Image (cartoon, rainbow, N blue to C red; front, side, top):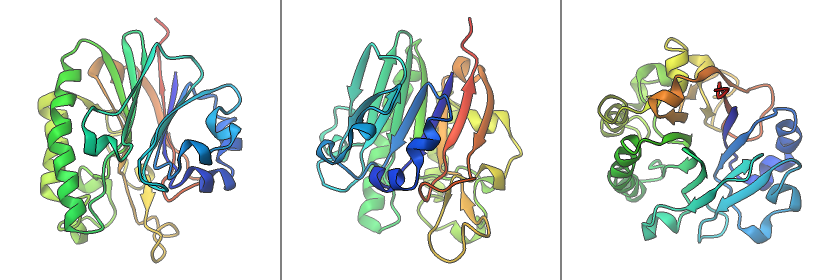
Length: 259
């Protein structure tokens, strides 16, 4: 089973850069998207249901903002839009596709980089989302949570870590929250489990300022985080960088679900 996570930085923008032609070559079973920056009326038929896929979306109330989606080859048993928390759901940050005992989630955590107000909103999201993560970890169900988590967990996960210790995305509180997720809750960072030493090849986001992309001054902020049994099925992971569809790169992970 191949799962791709990709922050599109605008679904229409990514479409114009060839993302749909590329997706058709990937033979992915599930494609989890973030930052649609669109509503249903803005999407073409190809965007709504690419050939071979069914599309499911959770749009933000605000036009041109946020939003998440999932493309699936197989029809889910059900789709869950949102967390049932009004202010979070108004921003279109969570969609879950349920397949028997497995759920695949497309998640978009807030960024706090634009200022103190949004950082406060990010912390509020994290505080309220953690109990949901704890509940799923103990539910007996298998989960893969794909998405832009807007946090680089450790020093290996960004190029200039010393210069970012006081910046959103690498704050001590954010990193401790991620550690709690892995160490206490028991969820698994799938890419890092497969490749514990990867640094620059693991980055998934680059600032549009300066020459961050050219110099690979990146951050690893896109993850697939899974329950331990599901994570143990991961056989291969990669970050696709040959083409640029967004300021993020696709994170591709293959899982062995043969039994």
